[in-house]
Structure formats: C-alpha cells, structure tokens
Image (cartoon, rainbow, N blue to C red; front, side, top):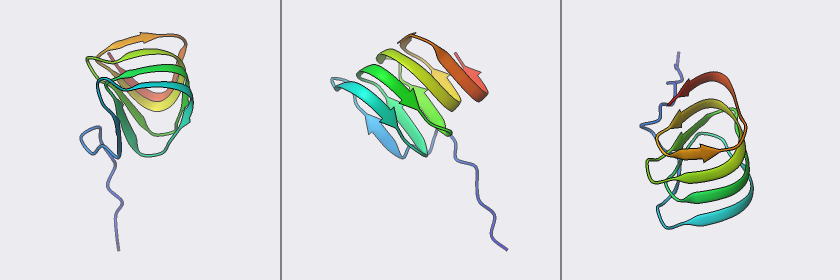
Length: 83
C-alpha cells in the first residue's frame, strides 16, 4: 500500500524569484512560491506562498495560502491562511 504524503510549503514545485514581474492569469497545481511581483489573478486548489519580498496585486483563490509579503486584492481560501 502506498500513501501519498501531503505536500507542504517546504516542497516547492514552482518559483517566481525576486526581480520577476508577471501580469496575467495564473493557474497551477502543487506549491508555488512568489518572491517577485504579480498583477492579475491566481487560482489553485493547492498551496501558494507569498515570499517576504513579494508584492501581489491580485485576486487569489487557493487551497492554502501563506502570506509573508504584501497582497492587494481579494483573497479566498478553502482550507488555511497564514499571515
């Protein structure tokens, strides 16, 4: 029998580094960490981590959300938000 381990914010599957600027609609699965700037909308059933240098101007829908930076917009979370 094989158990699927719950993915945590420590297991990053995608990364937008500091100095990166993205505009648009972002959809992803797994865990994404953003340390740059983003403008638009973000949707996932999984985990979004907003790094301490990140600035997001976005409407966010996520399964879990960790905010260490700045977020401007509407936030909707299914399971957990950590600020």
